[in-house]
View 1: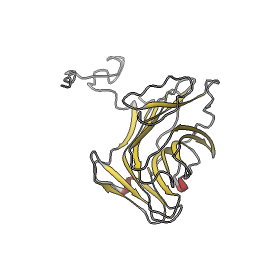
View 2: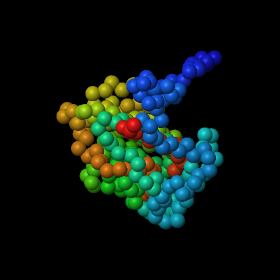
View 3: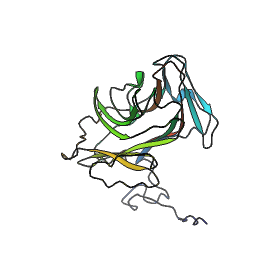
View 4: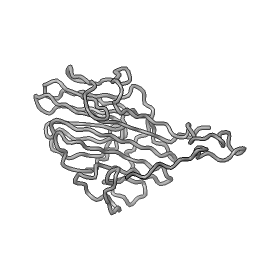
Length: 260
């Protein structure tokens, strides 16, 4: 039987006590310290909340499924794509501030398709100029973790293979420290390489599969960590004359923000 939840009847806060803090007696965590964007696709899909970047006449629409799903469908020509990206860039990698991203999906065809998901400046052609994102190229089933700054990339293989019609989750965490590290995670059930300097073990919440750092010893540097504002997005592209579908369960990004 599950344990009952803890109950804090007077609330919980991460604020300094009053009178040293304006919100010292607020009975919940500070609402301004973290900004997040979460779409679980449980409500009605609203096209106005996204910019559609497409080649062909594909669609993005609600689809039936436990917990809420959204379905992207391409048209059937080679290099057709269907991508969704938030219309305004609201995430920035800032020293001293943590940042998180998580995404879950499945795709109908693993070998003749491309998908891209993460934080980026554009998804036209599924080819951001700036971003931190996951990408599976049109050839093969290897999924890569990409840091891209002004058109130059650091590409880190994180796991293989991607299997058609099988759910996979992925995400990354930026610690914002003086010597920062960014860490990529994937579904614990997938085959994953052991990242540099880490004895990786699967836990609920995924397995750590890659790191990049500015510490001077990690083989994956942070040279190509972007310095511009980015938008949350995800998209799929065909690698042959066939319709491809990608079903997304959720997409989430959050960042610490230094505010009053």
